[in-house]
Image (cartoon, rainbow, N blue to C red; front, side):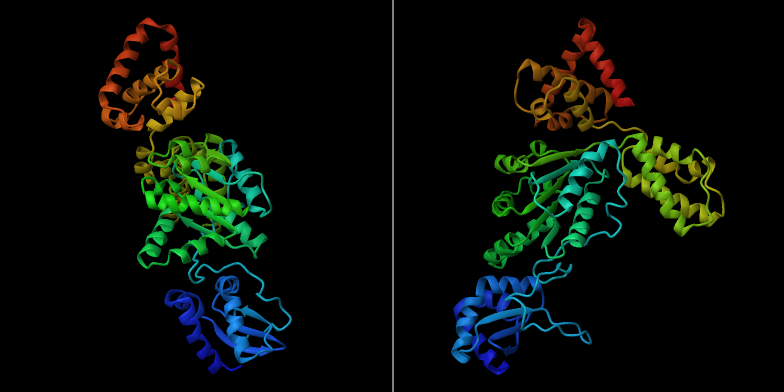
Length: 453
């Protein structure tokens, strides 16, 4: 068997497998040698070698035997880098051992992972301890009792950090596993590209071949029916194979508008974990951790007592803003040659401090009210008109009107797409009850205080 003969065989394979399969899978592989009944082929990536072995090995072996009857099996291997010692492949199994896929591995590309986002740099506190524990458990790479793991929370609370940390840990602990991390937008883009290029079977095979599928910001596919359909089938196929799925979103599955019920149901069948807004202690812990990192870049700078406590109290909505403020503070103090004290902090971060003044959101009010009345958030914003849901709904609408700058139509949209007149009626009704019903007045005061903390 020679390389010239392999070139002739490839042309016969082209007629059998078709142009698309030939271009994607057969053309990239190169015949290396045939020894002791084993035909070895060079492949650009381990993934491509595994895929060809699973789907075309029998066909290739049949064609090879027409030229060399002594060939009994095939071996696909990524060639060693130039100058590296070549490993003897003759005694290896049919497929070279799978290793972690590089970020640019052919068709199956993983979104870039931030090397800073590891478990070591994740600061754990009460608001995120369950999410951290669940992520740690999945990152061990062994069988788990919950699939999928669904992480949700607002902006800057650590969802993406945990997703990247899981991917880093899996690649370190289980390098043989095929871990694919991407955003829901990238999933949709690849799906549309496969439709356009008429390569849907290739798309399906690629996504069903992974050991761990990680999809960030899944709320992006809401309202995109065809993408949801393919995601649904991919999800089912992986779960049936006992493959792990990890999903993140900015809200719980049941609260994602325009997400199909069957997709919501699948996402809710595992462990759904909320990353709560950070509390003061967690923010202070994050700042202390970041100060240690900053001292590596600015070894001579000192932070006056009370500065970190001040920042942890004032910048409460977003950890990214908090970290960015600290970075700016160190850079500014270094440039002007001053100690980081309270005066410099207020001068340097005046715009951030103004922008970070406590802003209460509709979602926060909805969550506080549903917790206060011990009902599910999905029931409060849903279509049910039972009094046990309608009254809390009106209380939440009243608080949204009084404590946020949102318009009545916008508040209505956040409550299941209700008309602004419904919101107006709810606000008016609570205004009336506030002076007549002492319990309602007490509830409103308790909720207002809780929201303003």
